[in-house]
Image (cartoon, rainbow, N blue to C red):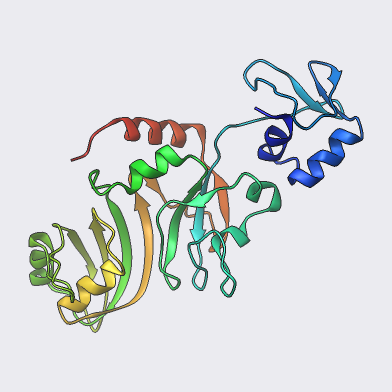
Length: 242
């Protein structure tokens, strides 16, 4: 790996800023000053330091975000604020991207990573990764709705959804529910309730696969996954949930 790429990925700055660090002679590899940004190094064996401090390099980063309302799940947009705009610059330089998407007005759990293999696994339709949402629904949600969801409902485009688990927390003119689905069609939760004559007025994802939303994270806040969470994701990636 090139030294400039490693430093940039480690959060030392943009490629341009990293070149300045190298030019200033404050970067060492195995105690030897390195100025050439094209210098090849082995992250597993070589000790890289900036001004005497060891660079903690990680190939992949994993961020758990509580996505707020009004922000889109994209890496860039000319008109809208994206989830990447919520990250610190030192984290953005690692080039993470959102795993899947949440609608602009939907809050809750969003995983961001630069681990393409893991993202592919979690998004693969063949894996049927469960995703659970909390929703406030306008209209009385009934056990008949739950039964319909268990069988699968037909959306406005004629598609019949896979079986889903609907837990009614409170039923009334405004109902509180939790819904677990194993697919990710466009606006799926909203369209499922529309199929039974009701309207979702608030939606938040609270879990995805083995990950659960951290209640300590306020909307717009994020944190790195713990080692335990990463290990759980790795085990989950290796299993088959068909």
